[in-house]
Amino acid sequence: MPSSLPTHAIELLRWDWADYQPFYQTLQNQNLTAQNVEDWLKDWSRLSECINEQYNRLYVAMTASTADQAAEQRFQHYLDSIYPPKLAAEQALKEKLLASGLQPAGFELPLRCMRSDAERFRQQNIPLLALDEKLANEYNQIVGAQTVTWQGVETTLPQLKPVFQNPDRQVREQAWRLGAERQLADREALNDLWRRLLSNRLSVAANADLPSYRDYRWSQMYRFDYTPADCRTFHEAIERVVVPAARRAYKRRQQRLGVKTLRPWDLEVDPLGRPALRPFQTATELRVVASRVFHQVDPVLGGYFDQMTAEGLLDLENRKNKAPGAYCTDYPAIRRPFIFMNAVGIHDDVQTLLHEGGHAFHVFESAHLPYYHQMAAPMEFAEVASMGMEFLAMPYLDREQGGYYSRDDAARARVEHLESSLLFWAYMAVVDAFQHWVYENPQSALQPAACDAAWGREWQRFMAGVDWSGLEAECVTGWQRKLHIFLYPLYYVEYGLAQLGAVQVWLNASKNRSKAVAAYRRALALGGTASLPLLFQAAGATFGFDATLLGKAVKAMETAIAASEAVQ
Image (cartoon, rainbow, N blue to C red; front, side, top):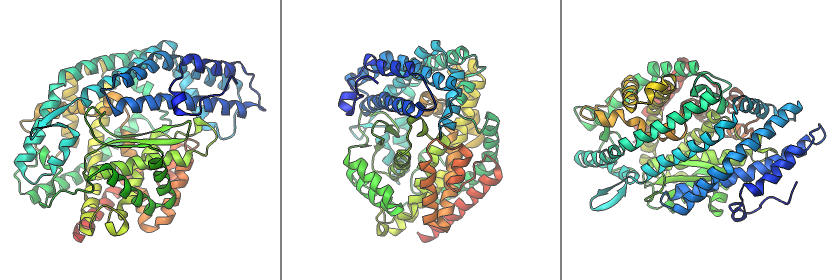
């Protein structure tokens, strides 16, 4: 290999394609044999780790401040000057390994993914894939800049969330309508962005000689173990099992609030009129208590989280011009995760940090694998890592266990989590069914009005129980506020499938906690070296879509909700 690769982040961020290219060329020129393939893979892994860590660090910097022009320029430079040749060079190495016919030990599944990449790869798509990244950044800029004036103070839309928990219904409605009005002000800007995004994606699929962009994404996301038809089966199971349970939950909330109909601003407030849960005042408090909770789940996992704190791998609080949402990315060259979120002091922030913590632990647990290409698990199981941690941490939210709440408030928090998890399946079905419609009907989907209508149909199908009368525009534009549709197309069913796995992990833990946590960690340690069904099995769960499996989970969750409510 040429001179050594960077060992420090500051040096890494200075590299350009001319620095990386000799390393790729050396690997490309090397003759592959059974005797040297493992060393060759280790060299390739190290190179891939560096160039991908550079991307992830630039992305973190840009999302940390969408108004930072220098950070945006560095990210755009990567997309223009490094990303395209990197894609071509990585693909050439994949094809070289495949052509060799060699089967390195433990590399069976990465090879399957590489075959998929080779079948899908087209040189003319490289600039289009870079453009997709740039257009996604436009979405972050539009949404990240949305603020309102609330009680005389400029306020981001995430910072309005605590107001939705105010017992005063008029105040909640005022805040909700103010935020919705600001979102609708960007309706045309997002419509324009959507047309450009979708047109670009259709070109990518056409170049790859695939009948639809859904086929392209199925290959790109390595969905070897299920089909679009399985997704429809899952939608039908949700309609049959979850929607009735959601109706019961909404009816219970309506009756407790004493309102004629349940409105969108009635969904976050405590239905019994109790003050909203306020688990922490500062991001430091959120982090310190989370550490105690993680240590209660498992001392090793708690230690991982403490390492992240010590190494500056957390960005937790919301602020103006911070990109929306939350994520956990990785810095593969140092085998470390990074957590990004927008905490504003509500219980949902606790759940978000537990969720992203599960992703972070996945990075730590799979860091022992020798090759970069082995580390990434299928996303459907990656979300079991995160959602499973939300469930495994539930018993430790009580202050007596090191958590955030009194005994009664911890019971409230458990009810909130279980109920929101149950209701989530219905919303997930809206998002996933909508995206299947988009890519089955791409010419219609190029018209935002048709997207509004399709979203409205799926909303009516799955989201019964809340009165949106007079709010039709706000309802049908809900697809614009789901960032996955813009940034991560067809990526959402993973959450629903993973939640079904996570509930099974939780049920196992209710019988034998230490055994369930051990299985959870063993499954995370497999990284991407096992198939999706086998990863679920390793965690003590079944991978499935059917109403019977889903019905057992829903019944257990409703039973646990009733038990927790009896404690309050």
